[in-house]
Image (cartoon, rainbow, N blue to C red; front, side, top):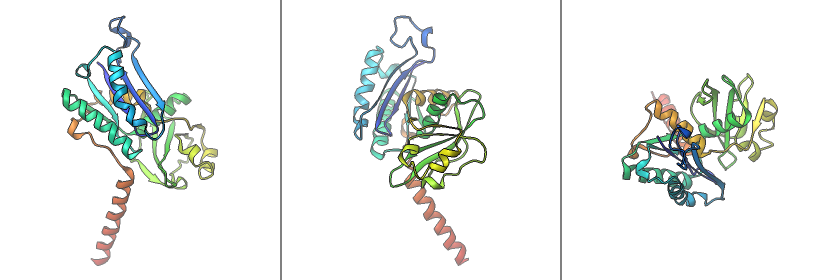
Length: 251
């Protein structure tokens, strides 16, 4: 089994080939160590490198995309263009080789990176928050499962940093929103039991979450792989609420 993982939702371009069996394969295989990874901060145009990196990793692993089991892709929220490029690469390869796709919410990967970096344990609470620009953040709440993976407790939200719903119980705070809005998130930093502001979506976490999704039968077809744009979703939700309120006032 070999999973290709791609994330282009931030200034970090991140690509990985992961074989969960690792050394159980042929010793001379480049994937015998379990993974080939490339993850670099290349600035605003980082997503432009993703396809070249995918091809390079496949060549290094001595594989073609038809040898893959599935493709895991970070679907957002994040940079609009970057997400579209990553999803487009995943769709193109999946269509060509008739492969299943594994859509992964990027904040889930941020949470997993924070869990790994901070050494969090089962039942620990996590808030993952990333810079959404325009003085806003994307954020979501998680609980660490027995297998070490984050379980999202509700939806992904977009709000001002001060409007993040902080739990009354101890929590870890992860993601670059911490450094992007130091004053706005000062009180939250003081409440957190641990902080990892370096956590970003990483292809290794996209792959790990993808493997979990595959085991649960959550794969989708290439046509069903779609990005999520939380800012658009929130705007639509507000409009829907205003319409509902208007209808209620008329009735």
